[in-house]
Length: 327
Ligand SMILES: [Fe+2]
Image (cartoon, rainbow, N blue to C red):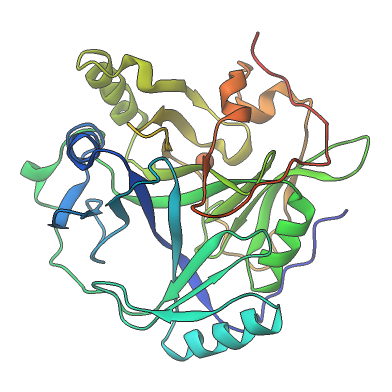
């Protein structure tokens, strides 16, 4: 199916992705990984949850690590709206789409609407989150990969065309996409609200599952430093793919796995997409430079491993087309 035309006047205004809540087995092990390796800053913690933010974020949290009897699952993905009234419009919108809606209590957040997308991915929308003092110039605090901010989510979808149509309807705009030349179906798509290449991307596969959550770093050298750190602190098996430069998005990247198997991307240097009439870039699934500009294919695990959303059943994709996979 062709990429849908952007909806420039959606029913409610989402400004960006905001945070993710990850269910983990061992809170202490996850804390060590997310603070000492990734370098996120703790903003609160208790026996069941750890709240974290990246260095330039003023909001209270971009990651919540939650002790769980279902470790290795994702609890919810969070998005911020432009104002508080957008939340009421979002409630009406998702109800009209037949999705469940509920107002939920979330620590450090104002009114929060819990709903789900057409595949069942749990989504929450809020406008107000507690503000914290800026720390981006407190250089003594910088550790690990020196993450500046959360950048995007990427999820497996068993029907990428349907996922793209759903998010397009509430204002997400496609920046780049991969089409299967034979079926003309979408194999992957990158969609944004904030003016980068994406806030949310979808990849063909058993879905819905989280493929990864990404954090922005200032330079590729931060990624090289992280590799040296991981390779000498017992984390070499957590390194999955990269470093490299994507064809799609032009970003410099590295993929790693956290202690529960949640995939994390370290990401920098994509491009600006704020023009409302920016044309999406099309890629062929069989183009080796699509995945990696330098031609190296991704490993099999990258196309198969993902983490489930808690309590959400998955389905196989009807699209059997395969990208180039490393031997
Ligand atoms: Fe990504």
